[in-house]
Length: 124
Image 1 (cartoon, one colour):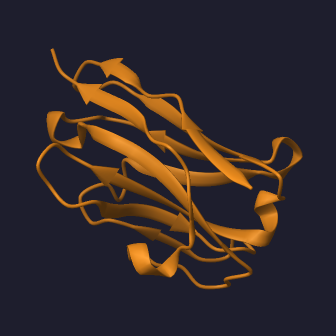
Image 2 (cartoon, one colour):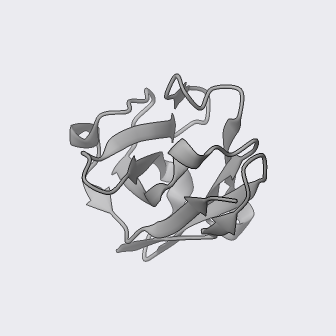
């Protein structure tokens, strides 16, 4: 059972990236999925979450209206579309999962399966 985040890179302020969280060994649509970021020297914090059914979502205040989480069940992937990126969005982004959760949370303790992260750098 593995998760892998991808899609990071270097982008200018105001630009966009789409991160992907792909799973191997299990079907993502049966899990709540969360995205987290960890900036250098700081604690990891929740960015967004989508519940098992997709009916509940969560966004950190500073990204609401700029980031969108979505599911692509056909490709067993959850995306985080990030628009109007800011330098303060620079961090390693990782995804996490927990089976059959019909609510959502930005707390690390809500999730029990973690994947390796992808670096996002927003700089001119």
